[in-house]
Image (tube, rainbow, N blue to C red; front, side, top):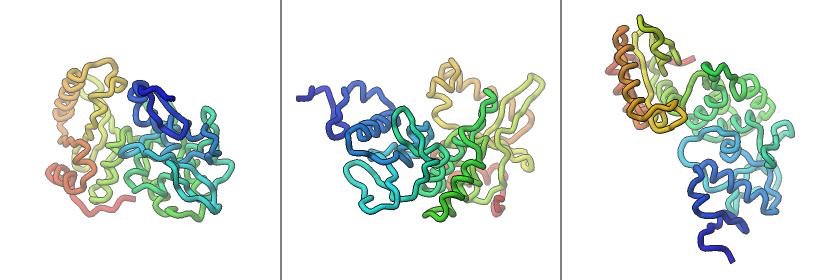
Length: 291
């Protein structure tokens, strides 16, 4: 008999409800994957969105309620009982062990998602994997050559053209999912390709790096996600009010250079019509093909 305070997350697997509620959606998904893996069902290699959760990669939208796994190109690979089974080839080199779980490697996970997700979602994942922490002088989680090597080894596979587009489009300087989706929208619109993380200074010293910059048009673009104000880790000990004030002072200094500046949030960044309304008013043209 289980306590009324426990909740069932998988067959034979229960967790204390208050502890479950304290977990983030990503942590809940990982716990579900672990419960299924330890249920004696011989769960195959965890993959796709589940592997992304384990590797700490971001995804657009909600974490799924089903666990994803690769079963290989064998019969009986239908999805059921909370597991989405992917019947695709898997090389031993693409499997790693993570805290007792068998998971696709980070590089293989990025390629799988680049092939299976819409382009915008694939770019969010690939950008994070390639991101170089310039301030901490850290390296990326994986380099592009490693991703392309996995892609080539997997050929032929469903979605390989889309995956290659995502892997070659991804950047090492896109520092948030909103910057990633905004860049995809910009390419769809055909506006000029921006410079990412351009550094600016004035007589007082360094102002900061901007999300997007179009030198030809003297225009700065800033994509403002909620995490900048709400995530304590990103506020560096500052209150949300202080972050807002600091952003205002930073914007004033940028405009004084002088630079034109346009800002947008999620609802605009993912919508071509909305983003075009902002960028066209700021003077950007359309009809340019990105290389």
